[in-house]
Image (cartoon, rainbow, N blue to C red; front, top):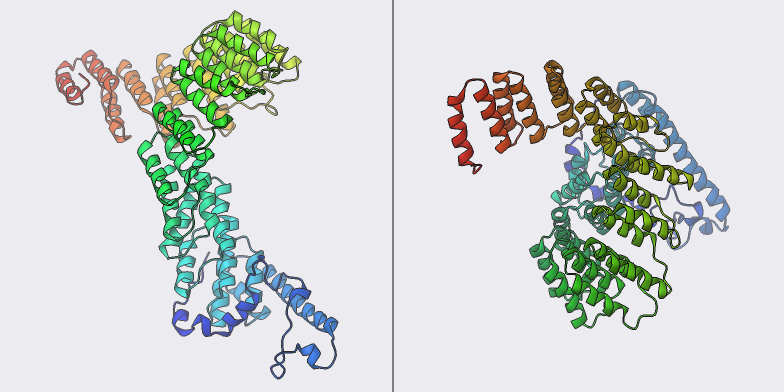
Length: 633
């Protein structure tokens, strides 16, 4: 589509502040409540004044307080603008931009007003159409657009999330001496955040800063919050520092959000630096910040640091709450410092009439992880005696620990007992099914699945994946395929893991055609096969003597844009050498570096064994020294 280029000469011929269009723009610009005069009720618009009687509205100066008459006249004017907007939109929708559209627009209005341009832009959703009309109006009036017209154009970009021309428009706005409204700034970022296009949102803010435009406070905080959910602390810190440079007042909550992101990743120095900065700005840490530090540093393995924060908050006169105690207890349990966790738990319980259920759940999990199940059962009973019924979370924690210790029969007994206190949920049944499948008790697992259905809970994709994976590993492929085929896709659709387990299971049993059909079905479900799927198909086709099909799978993987991992490349090299294709094996080994990987011990071992088998033992000396240089020998 041909886009009208801006006449840069307009910037020198017309001073925005001296043109009548800019004066008109002030009447029709967005007000604090987000409406323009065109959108607001007639009664809220101030009437024009007669220059001879500047202090009296015209309808009073004429001797008659004819508010109704003035209102009707203004309504008629607004209706005329609306009709003109409708007409222009119909022309723009009639076909692609070209001379015929421009002629029709000229016939409709030779000199489009600010109200008309802004009204049309608000109706449009296509950036290309909007920009063409925007440039056409600019050329016709020989005047630069007002801020409201630019804001309306930017809103089209925000709605459509098409930012191809964003930098160009922001540059024009910057040169004109104004910036997008706060509403527009927020919407540009929020639209990307809603679509999870966070890097795009980050780039939008950086483009604004490139042209010295000040993004809205909420644009920053919205994006920082979204980035915290996907663990992008460095991008968050960049935005945080920009806010400070712009003079925005950052608060403890914002500091907490950024500190949490660094602490989660175990980046102690960065988190502590932010804490020091916060304190130097005369902010006092609150209980929320301390709880975040205890939890995040503890989960990152910095137990002593978590303890430090626990004692520090008490030294500052802040009373630890249930979250503080529970987080610290969990940190100590995870670090196998069970005695300290028990002491802290008893501190929490001292003189407490109502037990903290979260602390009990955490402590029960701690005992279970340490294999101290008698203590865990005693704690359950103690909780009951205090008038608090153990929750399904406590029981699920116990069942998980029993499964890890392979105490299946005991887990089934606890499962029967838990019904007195809490109704088993979907997670409970999945834990049991996984445990039974791992123990080879597939009939019992199927029985649990049927019990689950009987109480009105239906298997989700996790349940199905557990059963299919365990059945495939137990070489009970017919049963695994039966479960797959009986899936109700309206309730539970297979995912990548489902297909991966079945494809590998069938391939290992030599049923490669069935595995390939599942691969095709996976594509039909719009699922993207990963390197594990392709590794399985390549290995099993070669294993069945169908090397040409194995090569085709590799080529198809490349064609579909899936990147291999080192395991896949090593497997492919191994298969090719075993098939007697020595030169092909050398070539694929070199591709390992092309894909950006460094050959590992297995890579060199496969190559050396392949060359020796092919009678090229002399070449292996150089490879041995290459391994030695990389520290593999």
